[in-house]
Amino acid sequence: MCGIMGYVGPRQASPILLQGLRRLEYRGYDSAGIAVSDGGNMTILKAAGKLDQLEAVVAGAEPPGNLGIGHTRWATHGPPTDLNAHPHTDSTDEFAVVHNGIIENFHQLKEELMAAGKTMVSDTDTEVLVHLISDEYEGDLAAAVRKAVARATGAYALVAVTVHEPDTLVAVRMISPLVVGIGDGEMYLASGIPALLDHTRQVVVLEDGEMVTINPGRVVLETLQGDPIDREPAEIDWDVEQAEKGGYPHFMLKEIFEQSQVAADCVLGRLDGSSVTLEDVEWPRGFVEELDKVWITACGTAFHAGLVGKELFEGLLRVPTEAVYAHELRYRDPILEPGSLTVALSQSGETADTLAAARLLQDRGSRLLAVTNVVGSALTHYADDVIYTRAGPEIAVASTKAYLAMLVSQYLLALDLGHRRGALDQARALEVGGALAKLPAQLEEVLKREDGVEDVAQLLAGHDDIYFIGRGLDYAVATEGSLKLKEISYLHSEAMPAGELKHGTLALITEGTPVVVVNTQQHVYDKTTSALQEVKARGAMVIGVAYDDDTEIEAYTDHLLRIPRTLDLLSPVLSIVPLQLLAYHVADHRGLDIDQPRNLAKSVTVE
Ligand code: M6R
View 1: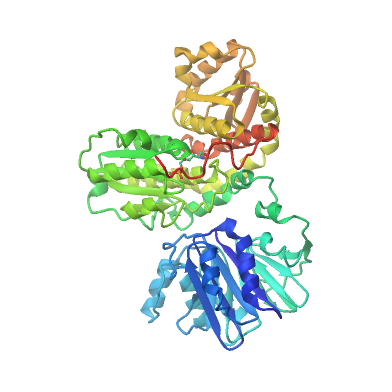
View 2: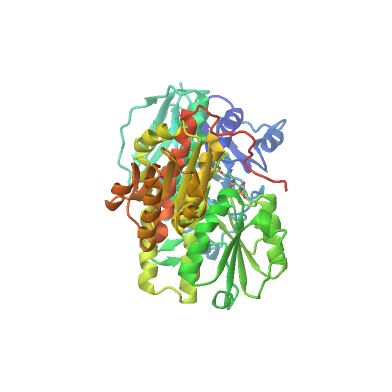
């Protein structure tokens, strides 16, 4: 997720670009840049770091020109450096491109371009686009962009400019958002409505597979095949804060609703049938075959993702796996055999305990693989391999989409390792790969059921203690459901394996006590149902999370949150969503500060 801003009109472009980028910082903020054209020349200014750094570069050296594009970056390919910041230019510096998203086949395109004598200066996937556009240019920027994007696959939005057409912006939307702002004799382009609201409320929202050519007084909207599209501008009545949240009342809810796209982005270009390509992972010869132990370490929500990982790695690789809280592990004296892999999970890549535990295992000879959302974060500096989760910036303190992206990343990793070790036969690998590919559509389905969750949330909002139970992977999901609830609703909640209840906690279950049960794992279904009967017999109010076609559970539950059927192995990706929504709506009913809960911080960089 990055922010794009474009302007063409009678005014100086650079202040408008900077103001727009400031409004888009919620989309990414690790580096930024602008390209401004005055007719004959194009000036490119970039800076790693927050937008303040770019503003300092621009101050006093404001590039003259009435056309420009700008970008605030959330890195996906290559660390946040000046060189990797956008805009990117071709070798003549006559063309510039800003881009948001992922070009799936950029490795192949890069090789082709380099074989043809092009020099690539950045690590980004974006740079190939600008070379393709300049190669295809024959006096018509729109035609060149059309031909260039026909060679690229992925999910992205881009804007291109050239000194040869000093009043033209050409943009394409392929899944990533892009909006045109209509002014009076001037036009704007942005990846989010907040960037436009200082200038106009008339907008045209591009849809997937559409292209737009913009001049100061004209907007031409077409399909990528060149068929004209007639779309009336819409009038926006949001204020800037509402617009930043995409119209949602809180970032947390927005981020929950982004999860279908997050799952799609995470597998994009990485999963083909059962075969997995992880671009920043390079296993040394023999390592995977000889792997005899996996350590998973993390804190909080990331640790709960690790509990899912433990079941996966043991199930799909048949390798003993230990998931240990990083703040515990770092003060232990772990016994390491040669041939171990540490998977350190951290949304921020900056959590002090996770860094310390990961380094301890690495110092004792383990290979270190980081699963993180932040390119260039501290964890990635130490890691031997990295899987970027590609969830985009997560603003709400309560982690939702980053958790889901960690789950999907671990499925990819398990599939890759399982394949390489020969622990997974082809039929099973195809089954898992196929089910993974279906998750984005199934997540859409779960998210449509928000109203049902809200009804249950109303019933819970007045209770003091809420219990979450499940077995195996369902227990792992229960731990995260419980944490979400307590951190934003301030209600006391506990998660435990369903079989553990009768060893003590059952004493706390009385008439009306809410118990949330996740029950998707068929091999322990009946066992979990027995635990349900035990709590039901004590008068508990039971809320079940179950597959759509599970009718048996109706006899043991008071309320049901349904999910589409998937492989039991993958159910956490779906079953966590109603629990995130439940936590959100309970907190909302209680009128709490959902995005910034008391006493918590987004990133815990101290011990
Ligand atoms: O950035 P990290 O993933 O390393 O953060 C770890 C925890 O601090 C974090 O998951 C925390 O538990 C979340 N606020 C929970 O929503």
